[in-house]
Length: 106
Image (cartoon, rainbow, N blue to C red):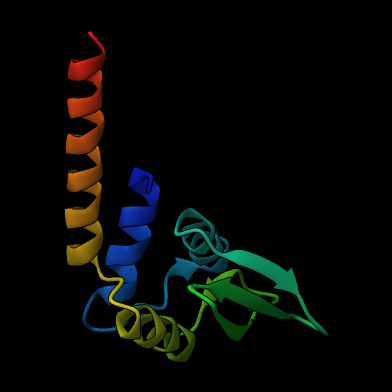
């Protein structure tokens, strides 16, 4: 995951719930986690991640995600063990594995 995805993930899990998160940043986080995004009817989008499909309503005309949607995204991510803490640990492990591979290649 990129640094901007960690920032978005942190904002999603912040307390109190924020209403200043751009929907495009949440979609970018989903893609960074490996999700596929499909356009649905109206302003709905389906997010396919970890074999699950979750449908969200893309906000309009404002680009900001309301608190209820942020809470819904947080619950779904949390139910799949995707939190700022678990993502940070996984990224550190991936970085360590890549460094080990680089050392062995030389």
